[in-house]
Each structure stands twice: as structure tokens, then as C-alpha cells.
Image: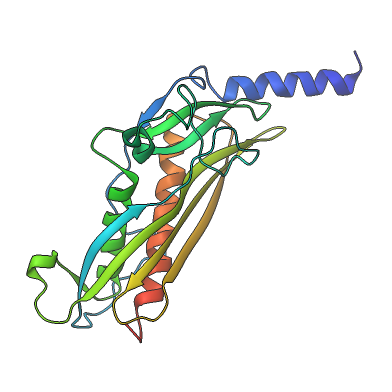
Length: 223
């Protein structure tokens, strides 16, 4: 065996170990409630009230996508997975060769719709709005209907390290606005080990950036 092949073999073995022995299993993780991070500031009150009327998960799952950024599921597969499983799915594990393996789900009690609603509320608050339930809105609140287009995390194995990725994309339909407001973020992190904690970290990083992007888009006129 040539030196090059030996180095490659060692690297692949190391990558397999780094990906952990539970890569084929279905993991459940808990994402923390929004907390102020770098770049997040609190604007002065603008006197406006916001109602987040609806948040709908419109992600499309595929059975065996060629691109790891497209949601998919192991075990029963995307075609047979329940809506409840899909509502909590946030990522897919892969081995050192990029082969899709186990799933990453939110813990029971958390859903993608719930996370987006919570982080949307925080973003509007930091943009100077008061977020209230629909029944307590009073006159002329800003009504928000959110549609989730992407919410997914995945890893790309590398020679010596792996890259964690996460996408969050929504469209926000705001009362009084002619067009929906798109909010789209993509974040990455380089890691040596793919433990369950790294999935939490990459999703929380994406949500922090999502809050910043949302707050900046709704901070001024015409809203």
C-alpha cells in the first residue's frame, strides 16, 4: 500500500471514530430558549403591537436526496415517517464517506414550528415591538403569518475535520405589506467530533443569526 493510501485510510478511520458510535441511532436534543448573543441588541419601543398568528412548517422531505441540505429520514424513511416525527426532525447524521445514517430530532415537547415561533417573538421584541396573543392585541396590531421553508442541519466530512451546517429560511407575511418578507440564514462550524452537543450548537447559532436578520428586516418602515 502506498503512503498516500495509508494516510487516506488512517484519515477515514479517524473520521469514523470522530463521528461517534451512535451515528446510526436516532438522537433527541433540546434547544435552549432564545438568549441574547453577539450582535443582538434591544431597540427602543416603537409603540407597535405584534401578533404571531400562525407558524406553518412547509419543509419538504425526500427519501434519498443527493444533497445533504435537503431533509430526509432514516429508519422508516421520509415516506412512512409520521407528521409528529417530521415536526421534530432537524438533521441527519452521516458517516466518514458522507452516507446518510441516523436522525437528529428535537426532544418531545419541542417542534420546529415552536422554535421558530419563539425566536420570531424574541426578534420582534428586540426590534422594539410588543408581542401579544391575538386576543390581547387591541386595535391595529401587526399580524404575522410565518411559513418555514428550510430548517435543517447536516455535516460534511472532511480530511481532518468536519463542517457542520444549518439553514433556516422563512417567509413572513405581515399585515399591510404587499409582499412577503424572506428571512434566510446559513451558518457553519468546523469540528473534530460530531457529538450530540454539536447539533445543539449549530442550530442555536443559526437561530441567533435568524433573530438578528429578522429584527433588522422589521425594524423600520413600512412596518
